[in-house]
Length: 179
Image (cartoon, rainbow, N blue to C red):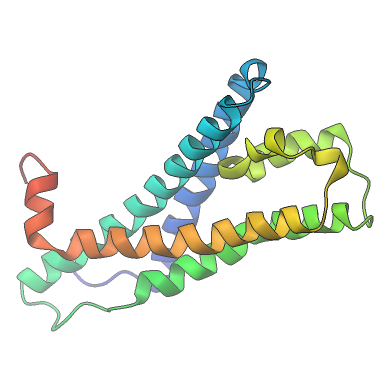
């Protein structure tokens, strides 16, 4: 057993992040009739961000468990310290590309239509309930910047925590029933 290619690990993390966004979009569209109540979008936003962060956490944890296994079998000397912070920042930068397109819409470069809005529910699925909190037709340039900030904060932290949790032998035994 040897270390995977960093690009391959990053692709797995990006795939789980995209899957988290798609799940958040599906959840938002499925509870759309109830999002008219004042408190439901806030709860949905917390849940979709939790789903997204959990999947990014899982990507880091799987890599951390593999690194811990290689360290235990004496195949490597030490584990990389900040690998998932850097990969999390790169994944967050990719997730910010749709936010940049939304910023262009809010600045008037593109027309904000219903199709663009529906597509952004799935592309920005982890933050899709926020479109029911803030009116998307009257977007200010601050709103997409806030979405970018959430991605840039949540993604590296969740990925690094997952990686550290995966490399820690004590917490892995508490987390899993049996190995």
